[in-house]
Image (spheres, rainbow, N blue to C red):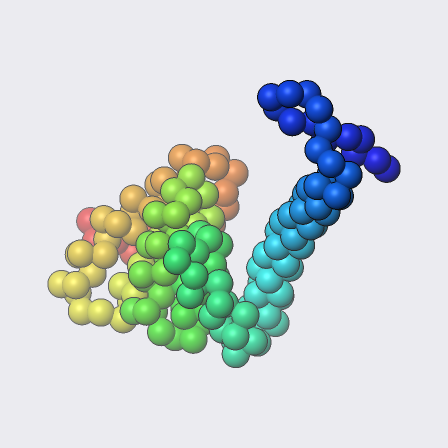
Length: 168
């Protein structure tokens, strides 16, 4: 497949053949690289999800480390890190990544319900007085998850558990 002659914007004359070859090569490499990066990114998250599903926590942590170390991590990286910390029984350390995931992508129902779930898990570990500080953000996260997606079952489960166990 030929891209044809590449023309300049001003004179309408083609670049010299050597410049055309360099430009075509650059475009080809750029688009190939961006496709590889997107595929690698999707593959990374698929590998992390598989590791978490199979309870391979060390493998998940190894795969997550470079994804959360970058300047502006994807919300999915924070989401999976919060799930990892929760499964490692390090709930206090799971709250911040869950909040970061919600801040990165506030319109994802699963991120909202994950935050509510982790706050609820933390509420079971703290004193009665500290639970009061966790109750409102937990309820808000579950309500937001249900508002974002009316068919998001974990949001409804979280709301039902909240109303079952919250003091009247």
